[in-house]
Picture 1 (cartoon, one colour):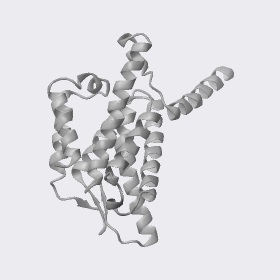
Picture 2 (cartoon, one colour):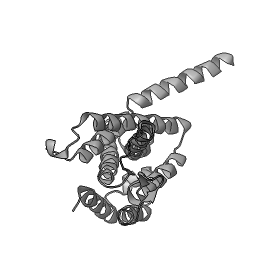
Picture 3 (cartoon, one colour):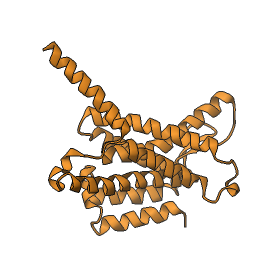
Length: 232
């Protein structure tokens, strides 16, 4: 059984038994809806992919459904700052995953770990490190892998390479699942630890876990606020 199915099954059981209620609540998702999303992703991998061009296809379970969830979370973001952070970190994760794909050996046999697992780990770590909320981490974890696939499809088209690019499909489904789970898991576990250090759950709305990218966007907004005060 592929690792992605195992991880999604474990996540589904965690949701059913209420272990994921806190993080889902903070992401503006219900347990039922999250469970249905997981089931939909698994079923979607068995459905025919949607072909955009002769060589580029979009997998329903690995791209369409995760993208739809990411879009929902993006629209549910509590501030423009969080939306900007999600976009910036998604691009950073996409660049990191693409670079990893260029650096790693072309032959999977030359590595001790499946390359698609590495892409997921890289995307998930970047998404966690630079995100300022659990929503942003999920969005960046998913979109990082998808954007890397899209970038490869565009480059292939420009250079005339006729290789197949299954966006969110084949082994890239593993990458998407691993990336989003790592991003959210680290955000929740480490974020919760920081919240306790800062005074407990009474301060959970502060979202204390902020990465480098979020700090940059915060500085930009603070400067803008200061400029408005000076004009007043």
